[in-house]
Image (cartoon, rainbow, N blue to C red; front, side, top):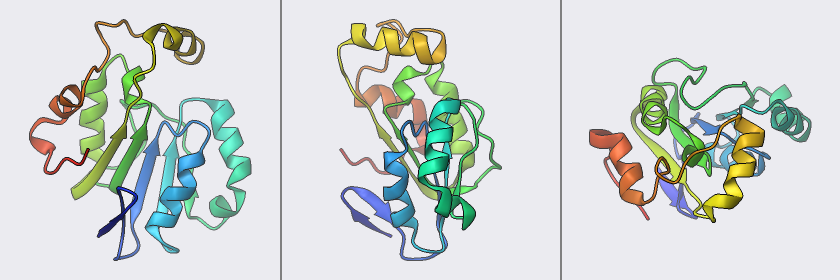
Length: 165
């Protein structure tokens, strides 16, 4: 395995990965490139609107069997244990009411020695409340939010092997 732009690309194919909470789907292209021509990516998303948008944008990759787009949530991923070489979750984990349950689910579907990449944003909390309520039907209070890298690492406990910041 080697890293380009801080995220793994795989020498041995086929590789399999998932983008949990992919939103507009921009990151799916990067991940598809990272797994190579015989690898597979699954983008999991709660929003039917975002699933439909990505379905149109990536129709060729879906038809070729390189991309799957199941609807799902962080805490109940629609995959078997040990399904993936990597999990990518950008700007989504901070919106979970139960981030520890999401972390357990990530570990469950990750293969031994796999990579979990989490990206977070720390925009003003007040501006997130409207987004959370509209998309999820609830808001995360400032006391519930993940406030640091240490908070995120604590979710994964003994499953963390290496950390790159």
